Image 1 (tube, rainbow, N blue to C red):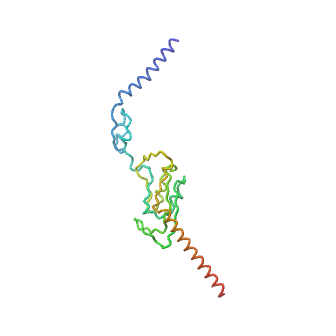
Image 2 (image 1 turned 90 degrees about the horizontal axis):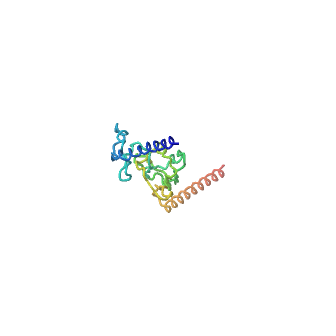
Image 3 (image 1 turned 180 degrees about the vertical axis):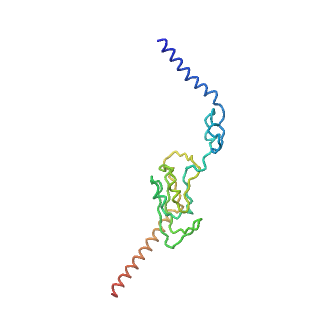
Length: 196
């Protein structure tokens, strides 16, 4: 019985000495050093935790963080939405009725309007596949990793700069053009049947 009591005190003392050691030894302020530094991991010994957000550790240059879209460079090819394994990218395109509507920064012609280009970062698994397949490199992963929000719906980012009214107008123009083409095609077929 006395051995059990003595053993419990020895065990408690060992745990308490470990706690006291970390309490008094680890009082150095953490230095923010680049990750490429050879002593990056050894310099973090005997330090307190960082005081976030006042103090932040550097982020790697090749890190995968928040997605961003340069909508002026987007040709609305829909490849990013097709390759996304979790369907977090939602794109709606409208074909232009007047042909080319401009050029991207790399010289690609834009033939489609981006009526909707939404990314739900709550679903995103940060795989980076969408950035790899983009032919104009308009979708990229930034080095911003902290986008704290209170509502889950605030993680749905809308990148399209087209208003709903303008999108409806462009849809109506496209439907009118398609109806005119269909009517002309039917008239040509009737004329061909009449001559035959």
